Length: 125
Image (cartoon, rainbow, N blue to C red):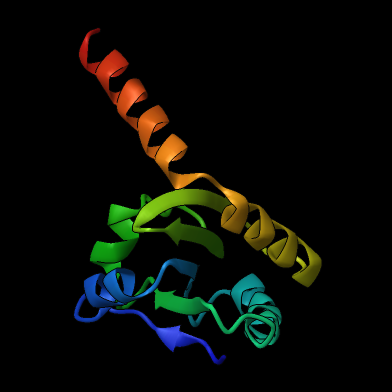
């Protein structure tokens, strides 16, 4: 599957229609982003059930702000609309494959319970 460009206009719909979305936050002027792009694209060919998306931080500053992107490239993975992974820097193909395997194995009911517990704890402080 080829990568898709995510924008403010198609972001919500993409999350609603797909269980797992991996996003590469990048910019045209970023050297490391240019090196990471082909690795990200090549890895996408191994996963028909995962959306590999790219967000240009220059054009989509609101989305970059929402994810608190401070450095690029940054890779974010969402499952069922929940952020389950975020890392700055380029990842080798093997690491992307491994991380996606771990993400697919997550018990999302447990993840949501843990998130609710953490939120309740923070609100009680």
